[in-house]
Length: 337
Ligand SMILES: [Zn+2]
Image (cartoon, rainbow, N blue to C red; front, side, top):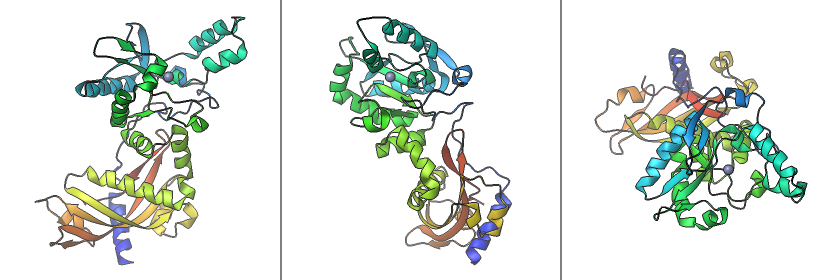
């Protein structure tokens, strides 16, 4: 019990500091879901910040600002691997989509089923967000590879592209054989910016769809294992930002997933939303060489000189939900105090 009390006292002391690892957030939701069943939010086009760019054919196009900046970094990084990507189709307004829809529908030879198959219903295309980017490949001979079948067949090049996506906040949106979840067949060229490298990495590492990721963060409150996994991985990322720490291991001892469960008097006074998760954890740290280990030991840690690890540290922390980025970060968790 003593350990927990120590943690609470320290939690109170640092309560005023914002210790959260910050994630990039705009005035709109980078995890917005637009698919065949989920419409673009009404105020999206009014709020989205678009910048001008050129595609592979030197046509004027528009892209969401942060998505474009990240795309340029991705493009540069891939160049070093000998892969040259260029922009194809990016932002498309609802109006432009409507015009396209009307134009195709007016053609008596096409028929409505044909139009439905090849043209997204206006309002239901991810390209409306400015966050979806179709790329094409500039081959060594200078020719462009942009034909869908050709790109699907070019496994080697796209494997290199997909491997780097998460580092720049992108995911592969339409995975192979996942039409059940996304509504679309495999599109190796269609990238989606999600605004946060950590989220992108989780989606890409787990090979899940955006739909599945959004479901998983909805369920975390009701799924103990998912919550535990989330706490451990978020905490690990959080601690790794501290240069005085090389490595860490955790044992989540308690998860408070609802306010009613918070028998802990300190937690019950805190302003926690429905989606926040409070937890108690004991953990071990491997400090970097030469750092002052005393701040890391507080309050009950023990340094094992043979192993080079500090053991028996216990803390209380909060996995705070950010409704803008639809992601969790660690708050009120001190290591260096
Ligand atoms: Zn696309």
